[in-house]
Length: 142
Image 1 (cartoon, helix red, strand yellow):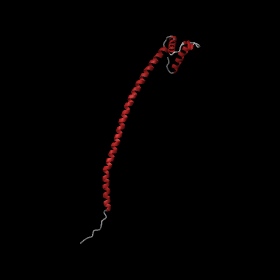
Image 2: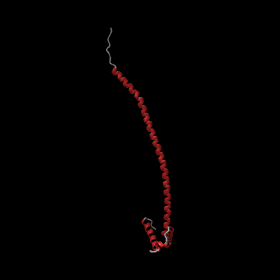
Image 3: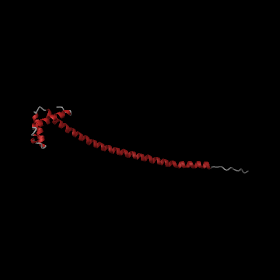
């Protein structure tokens, strides 16, 4: 006896198998793309870290130079402060300081004839007192 087999529609199953195969074929591609993306990001992070380290080293060097320059400037200011203290705080006669001011003025090309009308001594005394007042206003008290 011959039994007629009904015609089976395997298209759904066939399509399902083909979809599974396509997905399986995509997986290695997706894994490869993910690995490449991870490597690219890792390389970018590594380059950024190296650049940051280079910039930090350069900044450190620059800061050392700035600190050195500031220390030199501080030493210069300390010396100037000491000179000013010696000039204004000493028990020497203010005439010696006035003579020093006169000497500085002459070195700069300003001579007695410049102040003849007002009296050179008055000008020097005024300058001397003005410098003292100015220094006191800046917190340098002698």
